[in-house]
Image (cartoon, rainbow, N blue to C red):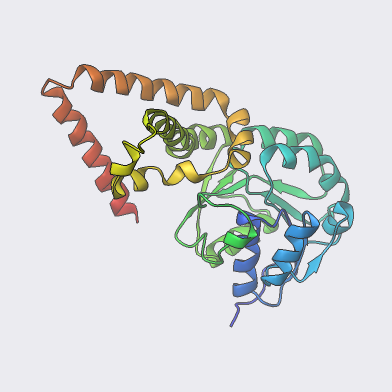
Length: 288
């Protein structure tokens, strides 16, 4: 049984993991909302089969036109390329928001195109999986997750207030910040862990010989640590390109920390590093 609809017609551009999960969540919570999907034909067919969208359109202009909420669930580079068309065809009273993993680049680009009429709101649900695609979409993906929004909490635009209410209805918690702060923070807590996982995977793979060692001795600890290594490059390429400086700085910090660990292997300082790691783990457990 859904709540009273906040929007009447939502168009989701990109019906993969994030866009598909958003559509499924909206359909579950607000079944009366009409949802249109725009993507590649085979992805749209799968999204429709899963019940994420009711209508599918191959033409971007037609998909955007008439929606009071346009949700961009595309890689940031693709999303930025499409912004001029979206801005030109979105209804004057519409809200256009994205779910891209970096915010500074797309918000700068949006500022050049959304000068009147439709409103652009930068957003990012801090949720996901190491898997991608509509087949892995989940109506509960955003539940309990932080949802970053670029701007001020006291924004009085009714379109923005409605989207904030929608985010909460889907079980996420809106968190306001500026685009640069978002990219710095996510560079540390999201983009850095991904790349550290990739680097660790490379080391383990390169050290594995024709007998299967040492991988054949791996237990659940390595599997847990390597979960992010299952992520596809296509999901992360644009994130790395648009947040390069923050990620590079974070990798430098990790390189320094690893060097410190190397020099502390036979000293009592190593215990201090474990104690700090335990403290962070405790904090993260309490956030669950």
